[in-house]
Image (tube, rainbow, N blue to C red; front, side):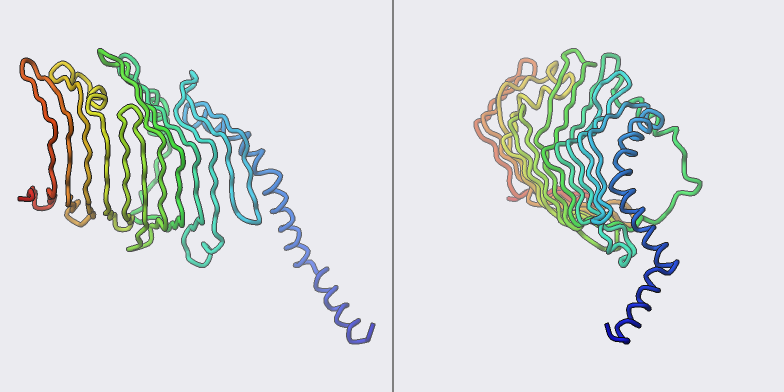
Length: 321
């Protein structure tokens, strides 16, 4: 080895073995080891305890894994229930991918947040008690901020995705108990941001099995200020099945058959004077409707509406001639 190379090696070795470098290297090794080995078991241990102490609920979790090098978190099989075991909510998998670019953008930035197979259960018992009552009371008695902030936290979510969701609803506090579910629920939002004047794109699809209908909804959304616009379409809604969801409707109106499809475009923005909103290109088509109210009977083979407009600011409604 030449004298020059030997001298460079000695200097490099001296730097690598210096106290500041050893401290930084030790901290990095500790961070990686803690992330891979400790974050998951600690989360799995404390999630049930926090649910019990802070939410008056029971929680179970399958597995929690944190990747400290790629900055992503995975949570499998989280279920939240009442102390008696009645299901509240849960999901099959949560994946959160944090972006290091947050340090440069001065905003909490996430490449992706994805929730697979989320479930929400709403149940009303006889007497009106809801399965979510205890959790809501626990949240209400929680600590309040000394001074509420008047600014939004800076957050950017490049892709927010909900896949295969299910919403279940049951109401036993009515003469004829009712239960239904909405599934699958799929939501995708791109570039959701609280930064000023930023807008993201969203697409939502939802199937109503009992009502035999499909909802498709897409458009844009902004948080700062609140603004949204887009198009929505509901197709094939079974009116007889939908009527069963309305409490006490059958005592005044019985719908025995009929389907409806509805489409509309909308825009809404929150201004200084409140919400400004409008619905354009509103259309609906009802087919094979049969209903009875008392002694009166109604039958329509086909009824169609096109080109209606509703201006919420002007409080006007117009129809296409």
